[in-house]
Length: 335
Image (spheres, rainbow, N blue to C red):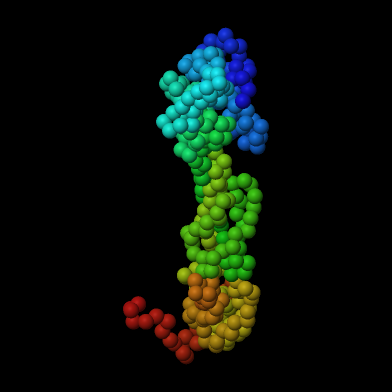
């Protein structure tokens, strides 16, 4: 590793404050979370950390300046003549490891700096001898920051809010297309498939189509609430539909075939002779879809409509008919 003073860009006579200031600047510049796709920047960050581990610690800096340890914090070898190299001393022996460790209480200072810069990054792990490291081994790249080259965990990303959308659905949509259009929070209009037997107030979830997350998490869902529009002809009774069908007096008396609307197209409905108003006739399967896959019925109620103006001949006929063939229109409960 290069000379730690050179790595931090300070002179050997630099004060503790100058060293700390230089470290803060470089750590912020090369932090892995700021340079996710730049391996070189991550290597620089590890090198900056290692340099500060040496000269940012008062005791280690003194050892380095005296030549007792190298730029990685390892003991330097000292030859003591022909008798052998006693300079190995405790290096590599049990209990005598002189590898990387946070000495002199510098850990708190180091963590405080990183916490101050990155709001809590780098404050835990990776300091002192790490599990599995060889005795006497130096810290390697990235020491002092959650292990070699490791990156800290970012705050958990939260899901965006759900969007509440109301879809106004026509009876024709339910019976014919089975779809409705809605506009999402992003302004896009999409077709939504209606479930079989959809009901008023039912909600359909569109995953990931809601509001965006504020911190890069997944988008929320769109919750589409179904509201069925009133129809000008048909009244809903569950999955059955009711239609009031206007007929003339003579159609009611004599019978007729009357063109009758349904949601899937008009049909010719046979009106029996002597039909009364309100007597329902059932058209099977012409209602709304139900949950079981079938359809309700269409109940057609003829409603007799009198002529728009008075007719003398009709008045004369009705008077004679009243005298010859009187009948009751109301039961005894009306008496």
